[in-house]
Length: 68
Image 1 (cartoon, rainbow, N blue to C red):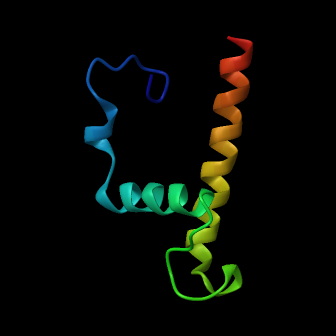
Image 2: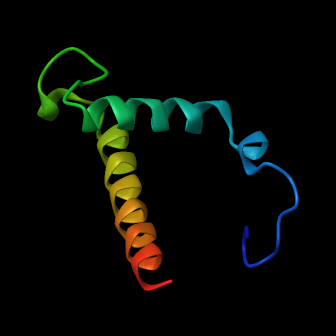
Image 3: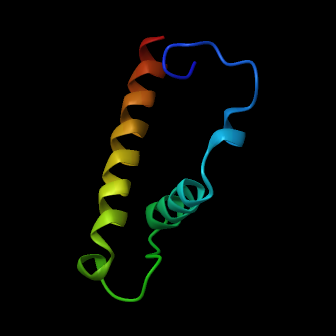
């Protein structure tokens, strides 16, 4: 479902390229790699905000999976 509506196609086709890049960076980050030179504090603020959003969504999806 997307926005409460059933989807009959692969939703990955609707993901913007820059969002796909953030998701790739997120998975590298979870494995201990930073996408840009420097420490966590030196990463772009928007990137770290996106990582927080992805973390929260991942936690939410795991909770739904456990209760579903």
